[in-house]
Length: 246
Image (cartoon, rainbow, N blue to C red; front, side, top):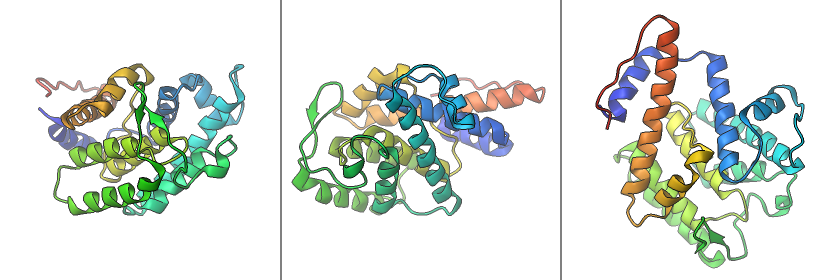
């Protein structure tokens, strides 16, 4: 059984209440920031988002990042409501929101003007003079492949976006917002890549073949749907059994 088979079961049950969905988005916030080094736990993230209270004694910027990410998710949900097509301006909006009140705020929501290295292995990203053209080519490729499997297409987009690394900061978080936007717009649950998967995730992004990131994203999506389905069906007195998942 593959991710499309599980999606059929997921669509049948529509398996979560609003509060559960909100908790999934909080976890997405926490883990996406955590991949980039943010130290807030899930509970600290939840308290901050729900009450505005900064519990604990973590670096101030960690709290700023969580609140910014919350506002970026709100923008994402607004776009999802209208099923808007992914655009360059949408990506600018995500990045600008993520970097508000940070040291890079003045350079947010625009393509960077300095060279950077990326990932745990410090590969060189697109040089500044090529970023606009690289992004234009990426959007053209994305529009031209409407008949391609959605998860495969957005996984490849994600790799190419991260290798371009168009912004001065926040590229990983922006990229994962784009990834979730395209999936959730088509009825999938929030895809949560956890901080404990950081090495595996970076290895998949840096692999020579796109099959690595496609496999990683599909497996993560299966886990997200299984987690939600099993929690829901257990609550209503049923037990979900999915065998031989690819």
